[in-house]
Length: 371
Image (tube, rainbow, N blue to C red; front, side, top):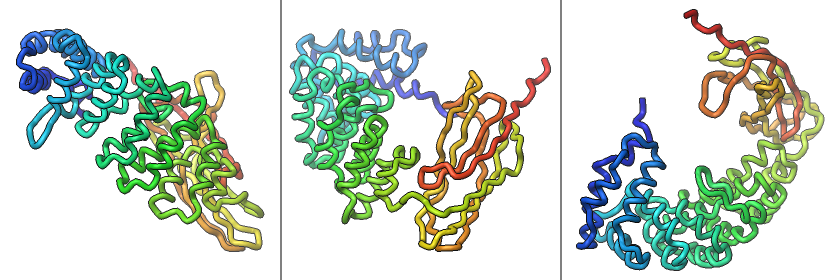
């Protein structure tokens, strides 16, 4: 069994934090900090542990944020000297997110200094929520920073739907203010940064598909292989959903004169096993066609309705009269993100975003073990 994530914040780490802060603040009461930060620590989950340590910082750092910020900044690693780093900085993020917005520029500057040692993408979001225009004006200046972590923070921290983080409703509604940031970072030399740009665009596409498809179209001509990868990764939700412009951006026009056959090996699938199937596509037209072949499993929900989930399969080119067969096994096993229900499911084949064949199958749940 993997180590529980909550154990990344533990008593020994709290002691190290105390020592590193005390080395830059002689009046810091590290014994009180440790006592407060470890009181009931082991009984808490990860974010609860972080909040407990944050509250201990509230109680032991100076009440003046400017003084506290100076201590925390001085306590970061520098010139080979150990300092606050890694998971120690999760509660520091929370400290800055709570008190920093009242000292706007100073708080963002501290998060910028922190991010090379641990992500600050969660910490900057309360600043954006408080005053989006002012925050983005500062963050936009980070796109040319020599540190890749700072550049990535400009993209990752402004994602409208960043997982596990505060939602940014203004940017969900209108993402236009972050597009100049993403454009500036699109050809960043670091893959680490470019992936963040792609993820941010994919976030935006969930609410504004036409906007992102048009954005991609405007930046794909003459694109390097790195930029082309970024744009395709940014389009992954659009491509799964069969968005016509997104498909056209990558050369997948509406398929014509295409024959698609779907054959299931079994009409019943026992939960824990897999659905084995074969797809055969034939180009009955007169021109070569570029085809993106995906499949969607329509899962039964608790109320008996069906909910589709699209899975990537294969991209091919078919000459006139040519056929291509694909064999797949789709696992039907326990996962943390889905609850399965018995009953009649459906699998559909999508070619360039359009359903071209489908079959039904029955998912059978195993009988419970006798008591």
